[in-house]
Image (cartoon, rainbow over all chains, first blue to last red; front, side):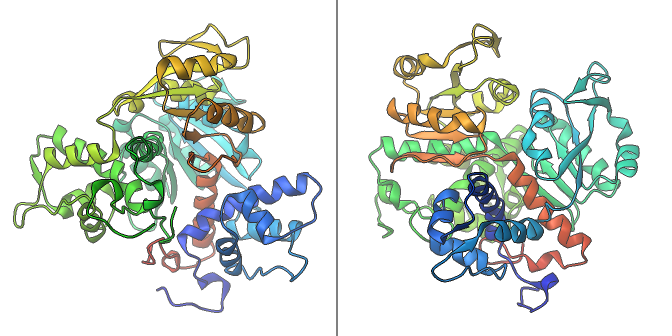
Length: 232
Length: 232
């Protein structure tokens, strides 16, 4: 399953590289906005917050090696990465759970500018149904199946309390959704073939607390090693 | 810098393990809430969404090996992990930027239950100053220095628009804050010794889009390999 192949569909891209591609894309967009046409791997690495050796390795998976003495063509590399990620497509998204976080997500302009179109906001609370958030009217959660079918929804976002998250995920999977972004503080059980990405706000804070504690205790932060085995 | 040592302060814990400790802690809390006193590594791994070999390896960094035939003592392992992360301490947090996302963060109960106390909400917009969110009154951003000093703030959270994020980070660093959680879609430049964790909502969606595209194109999702080199 992990053998390399020369065909695009079977090419192996490490998960950690996939996670950095959107970061490179954002950095390239910022360079392009400043009118910069070409950039060195060092410039791009610095803008993306990684080291340049890792950047070059990552881009080599896309077959992008730059030109010696010139660097990377900013526009072409943007196109290559966007195509690889799939953000040149249109991705209809449904958000379930329109509390504070659901409101923030619905209003988040970064979704729209990257091909993610929030086509529906659903909530089980009748008090929220009918409200308009970011130009979209909140609908009852029971309309999930119809919404997914009508709008060809590809990605479901869960912004409900933890206790409701598994039920919402089950209903999403039953409608054929195979990609879920989960903001609820719960581990979701889903069948094979369904991808779940989890954003847990408190977990990021706990990771910071770990480092802060080490600093306060006088420990050398460099004794924590990165996922790639290098010093963090 | 990465040599192992027998002293606590210099013990090497891989960054990827640090990132999973809060996930184990949450899974253990859920087990304890169900009245479960001991658990096997398989049970805990399943609740945390990792494989059990990885779990055992992670816990071995904490010196936790469980008891053969019995498994792990749920309460004791919770204590060990909480102490390792530092969430047995009190962490005063300041949130800068009280738009939709700042509101959601201020209301997020998961912070308080894990030792993170939101002591101040700051915003540069005079229209927001004076409002009360989650029981805390929004104060002018210019009170940052005084707020950090008075409350001994350890962690700063940035929930501003991208354009303001670097200025906020610079001001935070100048006041002595060395841990920043950044929600703004911007790469922050900070001096060595300052930890920045970035939560980018659109990046998680883009990673899902990558996988969704591969599924739609008939590619085998198993050709994506995890950060540890195993099949995802």
